[in-house]
Image (tube, rainbow, N blue to C red):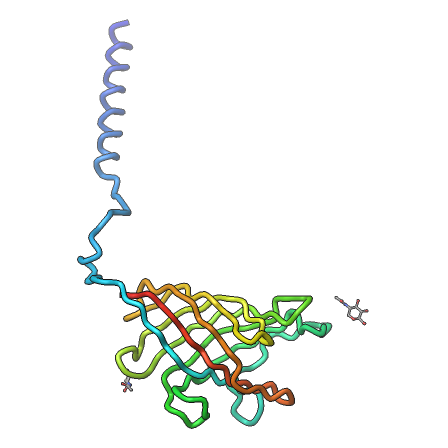
Length: 189
Ligand SMILES: *[C@@H]1O[C@H](CO)[C@@H](O)[C@H](O)[C@H]1NC(C)=O
Ligand SMILES: *[C@@H]1O[C@H](CO)[C@@H](O)[C@H](O)[C@H]1NC(C)=O
């Protein structure tokens, strides 16, 4: 009787020790911190203006089709292209390069022309050289102005959020080549 009681209490002690040990050792994987400790001071709003060149024709296309649906519908539903499109300061092809739009677009709508856009804008000019903005949105390319969310960024665009407005500058119906004007508004630090 006494023995089993002793055993029970020893067991309890061991269990208690074990639990307190594991609780004490358990690492926390989160903490709150002050934004200033990451060097974040005041949030600002930036406006970026550039032209996006999506060239499908010629010997050096900037976008290539990577998925071709079996049956091509009038909305091209299911196609996907991978793009590495130049972004320039002005609308001309020889205008100053300010970055690239790298990503995927494809037809995600069966009843109208509506693209899913998944793009990183990688800038190569001025203080934003090396910084990126990520766009994820719906692009109804025949609308006058299409609005798409900017969901994040890197480098000087850390914590970025905002929106892009795309407006077709020129579209060659024969080749599909397009130059699109982008106005991007983002909050960042
Ligand atoms: C594709 O088109 C063919 C011929 O018109 C048709 O027989 C087939 O069912 C279609 N497939 C799909 C997935 O729509
Ligand atoms: C942008 O950054 C890259 C890599 O650091 C550098 O090679 C290039 O010269 C820079 N371009 C401009 C225009 O500052």
